[in-house]
Image (cartoon, rainbow, N blue to C red; front, side):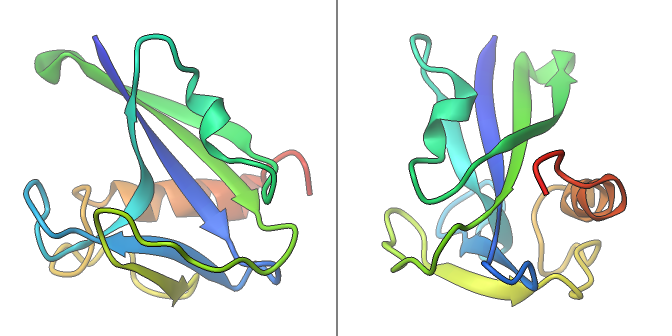
Length: 125
């Protein structure tokens, strides 16, 4: 089963959330959380680096697609320079409507995940 991670990166003041704008399908042209494929020898938690301490928030298993998603969240310890890879990066306010399917990927999952983090915290706050 293929694994993927979604990382909810909050700005140092917790008022913004980091997104990428997808350049290709799925979700071409929509904003999505940063993350990616988890390789067989890799743990999903290793993606964060030294600038953020991540908390493992939730998992989703999609049996009909033979994949799972690990969701992590954390607040940046300091300001960082954004380095784009495959998709442009942008900070968006946490007050956005992340259930807007015309702007955001994931069939409303981003809104659900954010509500969970905001309501129940990250455990390391």
